Length: 267
Image (cartoon, rainbow, N blue to C red):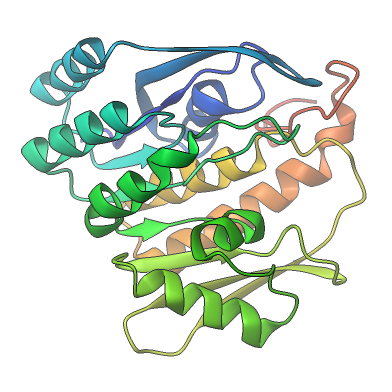
């Protein structure tokens, strides 16, 4: 059977993040990609200028169309901007019951533009945390969800990851890419076991647009291919590190450009 991953997220007209980054990631990781659009954004490497939410009934129709025909192995959830959209996606997933769900709690674009209504945060936690196999917040998203200062040490990161776990998630990958250390360290916690750490050297580039979308999609890809969660995260982070390392070989826009999703295929 062909491994299939589904992204439920917003689009990025600039192609670097959102649905576009997810589908590129699925393909780069050897997985067939399907999509359900939740929002359209007018966006480029410099920022987001407009957002158009997709009607809830049409989101439901997209989900039903995909699940009624395709044997989806894993789902990645990205931008869900409003409470009714979150509830519709949760209802659809509870009905169709995919075997693996990765939730990237997208709140703010790389440019700093808000992508999640503040009143929708509680709905995200209530409806999607319990059904996700792993959530993948970055340090800024964790501080917003927990109402605390940004973690600056390993101990603080693990503490915040476990606090997020206590909010209903099955597993938490807290991403340390916004820390100030020499390495980008991510912390994976699930249950009461020891934390699993993943580390990669920081790469000096401004072209990191779509890193969060791409990492969560790569994790979903490897779950769709049959890896367990720790191995899926390991492979996803290794791939993303190379995509960032090759980002400067692309010349896209005048702001924060995308990572190079197809670095292993393009000359």
